Each structure stands twice: as structure tokens, then as C-alpha cells.
Length: 294
Picture 1: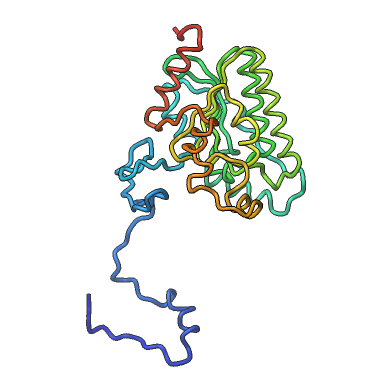
Picture 2 (picture 1 turned 90 degrees about the vertical axis):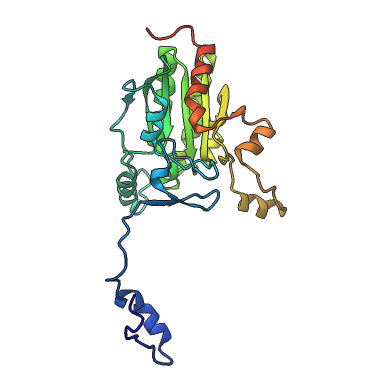
């Protein structure tokens, strides 16, 4: 570093003007170049982690906090290799309410997530047991539930009922998609009705809560599982903390709406580390399914 390098001094009274253009004019020629994506910050312990320290499960090596992962990555660590067959892969959303720039929002979400919409559904085997699976993805508009998400999940549940197979849904969502108005809210009733028919047929439905699962998804199929599992420290609830505190004028407990809080109050059956999720699902399927796949 050159300690005697000439410095530019800011004239008195022109601080704001110089601050506005400082970054554009600053000389970064001697600064090291660090590629994007090498480091990530854990939202649980605030540690900065070298990305290569984390394996396919995307768990913080310092505190054990679970990072949010995409639907494809989730399928890779859950389904038996090569067993997943996707349903309705090309289904895309329209703009039924004429919401301004909704098409641009959708296009941006597709680029970010690599998906056509916020859920991936299909048939697979897990530990040799056949199942229908749906995995929501927070990278697509925070997993919001619009017409496509509701339709794909409903079709998957109906196919599960028709084929007499267990249903597994990994949930993550910020709630109903406001750009689709009442049509997004209709998906709550539609998915819940499909779950009821699946239950009436005597079939198993396992709901796996991942962070966050809120709004209309938490108020419908996410909380209707015969068995409800959750990843550690996942948020499960309807309205947000600030909304509730503002409504009741009271301070909520620090762990309010966490998976641990919900398990203590009977809304979650078991908290499962992501590394043990597949083996836990295999055990559940083994107990409820008549036989293994040949």
C-alpha cells in the first residue's frame, strides 16, 4: 500500500455532493478481486461462512442453522437417485387480475429460481417406497401461493389419492400471492378439499415445514398433515410477529412461531435435522406402506 499516495480533499460545504459520486470516482485498481458467491452469511448466528465448508444439506457448520434451499436441491437429498418423475412441469401463471407489471415480476422470479412457478411436484421413491411429493421454493416470489401453486399441489394430491400413494409436501411460503387477489385465496379451500378426500381414502399425508411457512399456506394444507415434521428454527404461523403485537398490544415470546414453540404447543409432531429427514421419512413410510418397491 502506498502511504504517500496523493489524496483528494473535499472542499468545505461540498460533502454531500462529493459523497454522491465518491464510489464512482474511487480507484479500486489495487484492490483484490473476490468472486461473488464465495461467502455466505448465516442468518441464525451472523457468521460469515466459506461456501465450500457447507455440504449438500446447506447447514451452518458453526451453529447448525439451516439455510433455505431450492426445490431441486431438496429433491436431490430426499428422493432416491433417478426416481423423480415431474408432473405439470410447464404450467405457468397468467395475470387474471390485470396486476401492473405482474408478467415482469414472474419473469424475474423464473430467472432467479430456474422454475416456472413456486412449487415442483412429481412421483418418486424414498428409500424404495413410492410416494407423491411436492416441494415449494422460496426463491420464487418467496414461495407465495397463486393459481399455479394451488393447482399443481391439488393435482398432486388427487394423483396420490388415485394411485393410493402417500403424499409428502415440503412447505415454504410467505402466504397467498397478492397479485392474483381472490384467485390466490381460493387455493386454500381447493388444496384443503383435496387433502380431505385423500384422508377419506385412508392414505398418509406427511407435511414437512421449512422456513418460513406462513399466511394462506400455513392456514391450509401445511397444517393438515397426518404427521407434521419441521426443520429446526423454522417459522410456522399465519400473521407476522409485528402484526400480532400491534393488534394485541403485547410483547410476544422470543421464540414465538418457531418450530420449537409450535412443537411445545402441539402443532408439530417432530423437529428433524435436514441430514436426518430422508431416513425419518423412510421410517414413516415403512410403518404406513404395505410393501417396498421391487
